[in-house]
Image (cartoon, rainbow, N blue to C red; front, side, top):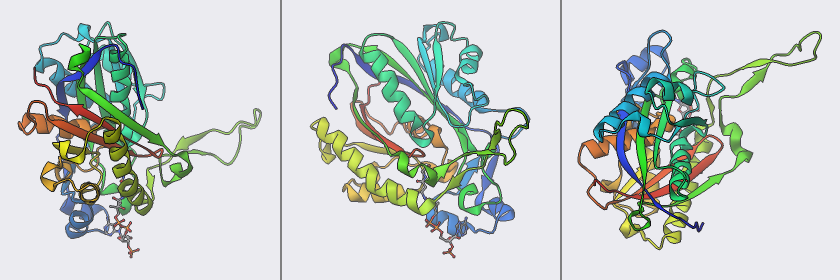
Length: 336
Ligand code: UT7
């Protein structure tokens, strides 16, 4: 996809937050019939964090992640023009981003939620880059935050062992066209397969006696793991190749492969298919499990903190999940 950009955009800070409570695989064995061996060999996950405590929500994690990112560059929250909160586990169906805006005192920012599950961070960052590259905004806070522990059926061993809670934040800033570091993207949705991964709304059988109106409730997470696995391993490499082609980049130009942290086998299979050396894979899912919209910014923040990423490194980022939606974002890293 070609776009006419007026200005450049780049990531200038990252931050993340995870809850204190940990559930390791042996604790998981007390909840469902599973084993550390099964979980580690099938997923690579050893433990995950869950948000415990009454009235805690994504906002608690999103606030910490955002403030960490702001503090890193000594930016006052009032300098933020826009907040995009990528989440599929809001604490208000009307949207949670405004609560984040108020809590961090980003008084000049417009704020909205973006729902795209595990692709949410990629879609939110691409959306933010459009506002920057067309010259409308100067500073944008993008947060990926999910607390899927609240939506997991804790007696369904096929899903409850996978997910964890977290938030990750990045601050994007506009810059000159020559300094643009959000190099390109490639996005996809195929709603024909939405049933493979959903938190669906279920209507009750009896309608309202006068209005003939059906109301209902949201169910727990359902996933057809095998189908989602096959989809990820076949479609993500294609998306990456399309995106690289559009940018005249080759596989050899990639310094880091940062995929949504769903399953270690998926990370390895995608890298294998593209002949990307496994040393270039950024992975932290053994510690946090699948944290949905938070997984990519959480792993990015950790990699930055560990000084893994060098100036000018090319990072290929791909998200995939419910929708089904998937996509790739290619960025170049700049510290200054
Ligand atoms: O974040 C959005 C994107 N999500 C993903 O990309 C996830 C994609 N899917 C996956 O990562 C994998 O499909 C899973 C990790 C979810 C499952 O791994 P799998 O190798 O596809 O296992 P499976 O679902 O085919 O199950 C294999 C066997 C079954 O037993 P039978 O039918 O062969 O007797 C399951 O009942 O493993 C059984 N099983 C378990 N056994 C022990 C399923 N869950 C568990 C468990 N512990 N937790």
